[in-house]
Image 1: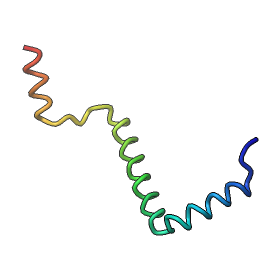
Image 2: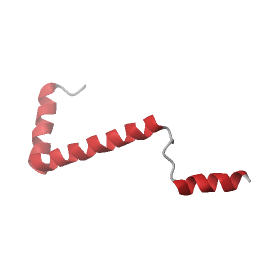
Image 3: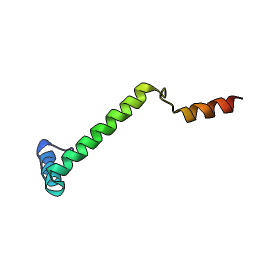
Amino acid sequence: MGFSIPHLLVVLVIVLAVFGTKRLKNLGEDLGAAINGFRKAIKDGGKSQTPANNDEDIEQKH
């Protein structure tokens, strides 16, 4: 009891009718930017701390 291609096409047509193509395009762009930002943050691994955070770390060590 799964979804077949015709079922998915019907759902896609309904989503397009409700939201419109322009809104879905904006949603896709926003989602892509969020994923890229997340990947960049993971890749950096916390190396990009702000100077304020570094000062707090130094004060906590003393």
